[in-house]
Image 1 (cartoon, rainbow, N blue to C red):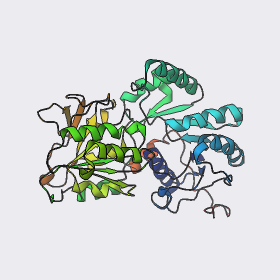
Image 2: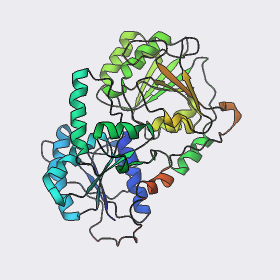
Image 3: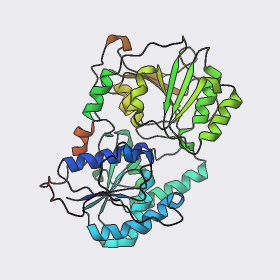
Length: 389
């Protein structure tokens, strides 16, 4: 069985990080799992992608980053014809357009499309006209997807409704965001480091792009922060300059730190009191799973709709109200009073390592993602199967 995964680059992103982990796990399990990269730049190449064999086309002189989707549509068909994979793995929503193009360009020569739905399909953040157009596009996508992968039970109905895919073609595979080794490591690091100041320490992790709505987080922090509170934002992206200007305009620039990309943000969890999530829309955010495993309180904006991962072990959630909310968050961009959800572990940080085991390790669910395929013999190593130079 040959499973081809395609990614634009090694630029940081949750979808890409998990896809790279899956490729590594598939190969360790004996599957032929080629990896096609549109370009080779990005911080994750020397992080989660280190030592991974991949294939990449010769780059155009003008660069391909600003037209990466078209570049992938142009270069991927030739690689598919040469390697003839059995399945084309679509790592997330943003990659489905490429998969649809492969079906149209290659016809019967295109392998089966297995698409992981990584984000909310309802997109309540869009205006009504935008949602109508987007839903028509989703129906068109569904005509070309052979199997869809939902990361949580609530996503199945949404996929069936918007993509018009029969439920028999939808598999539920919890997001393999954590490995067993990572879970054990997070448990060891769950004891909180004593604070230097008396304030609360908030953490946000993610790409600085419009979807994450970090501007809302900054406004909420400016309104709800108390003396000594500090917010650390881990991640990078095109929105960073504007967000730094906004923090200065709001007068919280001295209480907000932008760290840029950090290879392992979970190593910072023990230094913080709560993780903040202010996204306009999400699927099953990997950082929330990591925070739960580390026994870190999570405060999420109400626009995040798939709450099924909270109902694990002794986790619980409740509406955030002014009486117990560290920060007032509202999905419409204005501070509010009851539009967020606070997720907490049942045990306190001081009670020692938690007994909770997140049901989302890549060792357990990497195999589930391929359970319908027969286990192959380890493929012979090709003399040409070397990292690109």
